Structure formats: C-alpha cells, structure tokens
Image 1 (cartoon, rainbow, N blue to C red):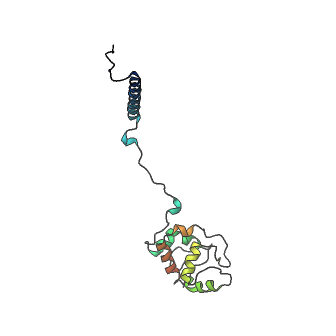
Image 2: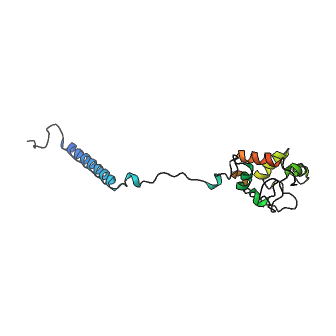
Image 3: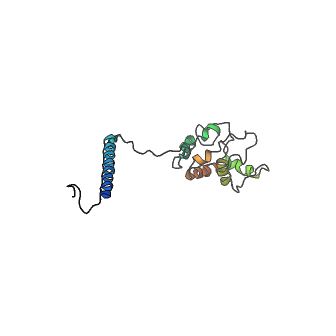
Length: 168
C-alpha cells in the first residue's frame, strides 16, 4: 500500500533529497532576508573617495602669471629672482641665469647633461644634486621638487630664468 504523501513513481531515497534541497533553499532565503534587514540604508553608505597622493598634486600648473608661479612654487623663499617681488632668498643661488647660466655650464665641476642654459635650468630643478653652485650648500634643493611642477610650469620657469639678468 502507498502512503498518501508518497507518489508510486518516486522512490523513498528521492524524498530525502527533495527534503534536503527544500531545507537548503529555505535557509538561503532566510539568510537573504536577514541580510536585507541588517543592511544599512542607501543614504548611509559612504561614496567611494579616491586616494589622493600628495606627491602627485602639483604646486603650480604653468597657467599662472609668472609672479604667482614663482611665489606659489616657493622659489622666492630660497632664491633671488630678478623682476619677482619678494624673491629675496639667500639659501640658494640667485637665479639670474641669463647672466650666469653659461658660466655654470662651462664650470669644470659641472657634470650634467645640459647643452643650453634652458636645459641646465630644467636639470637643476629635476636633478638638483647634479651641479651645486660654488658657495652654496649641497642637498638644500629638495630632490622631489621637480615632481611637484607640471611640465608647463617648468617650461615657463625655464623660459623666464634663461633671460633673467642681474637686478638693476
């Protein structure tokens, strides 16, 4: 005789498999419901904030007027720069490279790769230890400085300084 719940075509071992499958499905559904109830409301989820590396944030872009470019880049703190108000620094050499650039390139102590005054200026910012002007301390210009200027800013600085001569 066949029980009312049992179907004559399904063997008893299949009933166990169906019961287990139904139990697993019920547990999954229960866990999903609990997860939904415990999830924070959409407004409580913080938006993703990109990591900002301060080493990658430029000091200046090169779009600034020349006075502002030198001030914001911090050059005025250490250098005297003709035509730039407040550029009275004494830590680094004066930057009248229209007058002194060629002699620096010709100095027997110079070991850099620059062929022109403009290249020398860029090299001095990007690799400040390549040549240290006699009478000034080594390792004063930060080695990271060149990474904090955009190519446009560095080009504008070099263009200005290669023409700069001694103050009147």
